Figure 1: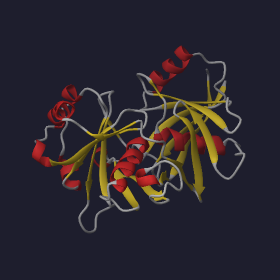
Figure 2: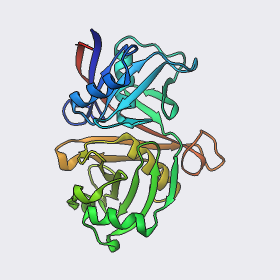
Figure 3: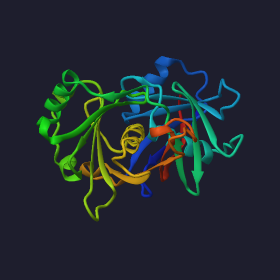
Figure 4: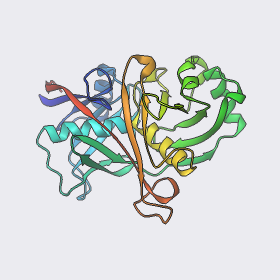
Length: 285
């Protein structure tokens, strides 16, 4: 028997965020067992806490969807950190250091809220028409509806599309059979007094809309803060069409001189949210 947690991420109320399943003390399980358990939970991600191989790290994390392993993902990072802390984990320093396929990821505690430092983009820059056209067909959008598009890949492989406003984002009815790959994120600003500054939606390669997505929000922040489209600090709403109330707090610390690490225009982008420990027990693995 191993300790098991399920954490709702990017919400302060259980059932309104994005859940992640966390298996503690997962050493001794092989890749087939990890993948099989992730398929069984049938959540967007399941994670496994392991002893670190890097002495700087507090723990090592492996992240699985129902179909593949990811080098990095945002809501599993925050949910796993919350589960690790709740199980008695004590970081070596002020920041929690997670080792994962993307390298070392730093997590800070802002009171009860956790935030991760966005890893550097693996791929960025404009999207050519050959790559954008099938995405637009899958989103059922005309090219004139798009203000901008960019590669925003920090591990999962995101292609991000900026629409004219939040209402346009909420109105999208995707054709998942035509979206294919890569994973696609869309974002639009709220005008005046909305529930947040922007609305975000994520359509992943497993053919579903993801409720609240840390990695996508991280890469959107790096892209649009760096481009001067969004302010240095803002709040994203996500999950609205799914009956969720995800809130993602994004900020860039450090300026164009490169202070603060990797991020848009030289600063470090941090992505934070509330977490709720919903399930705590053991699992027969």
